[in-house]
Structures are given as structure tokens and as C-alpha cells.
Length: 140
Image (cartoon, rainbow, N blue to C red; front, side):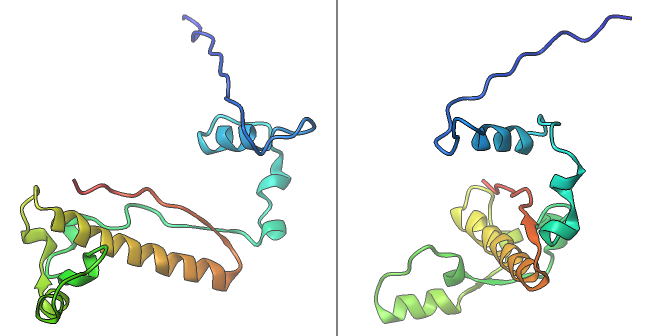
């Protein structure tokens, strides 16, 4: 059996590093799952209050049947006459029915992800835990 090839890794300069400790470099390696130098005390839930992690995607397209979103909620900024903005805020859309190349499809799906993230942040704060950010889906 052949041994796996050796791998070398070099991290770039980090502004948060100090001569005594490379904070940023170690954190970047932790986030990539490449740092194994922490002892159990680093992950001790009693010391940190624990973690809250959402499992799975925030929103799955197959689970959105019947979900409706007000179009104006998905907008980044609403401008125009009162009639236009009122219509936009009252227009309800089904994101699953929008064509894939319609930007509103992306924005309405993203509204649902942001709402789930908002709720997770509130729950983590109420429990005194650190939220491990979930994977986001791009709907483009």
C-alpha cells in the first residue's frame, strides 16, 4: 500500500496575530478543519456556555410548497410612489413558481434563510451559546 503524499500548508499574514501567538492563522486553520492542536478544554461546553448548531440547509426548495413571501420584504430597498411601494409590499409571491433566472426568486428564498438565521441567533443568545453558522444556499 502506498502512503498518502505529504502536504505542506502555509497561512498568510493576519492582522490579529501577535509575536507571542498567531490568533488569526490558527482560527483560519480551525475553520478549515486543519488545526488539531487544541485540547479538549478549547471545546469545553461548560467553559464557553456551549454551542448551537443548525443541522442541514436553512431552506430546502422541496419544503417550500405553499410558502408565500411578500415581495417587498425581499427587496433590499424600496423606492417609488406610494402606489408602487404599497403594491410591492402587498404583492405575495410563491418563490417556487418564479423562473430560475428571475432575481426575485433568489431574494425571496434568501428572505427565508435570513429569518431562520435571525431566529437561530436569538435562540443562541437566550441560551448563552455560540451559534455555529450554517451553510447558506445561493439560489442563483
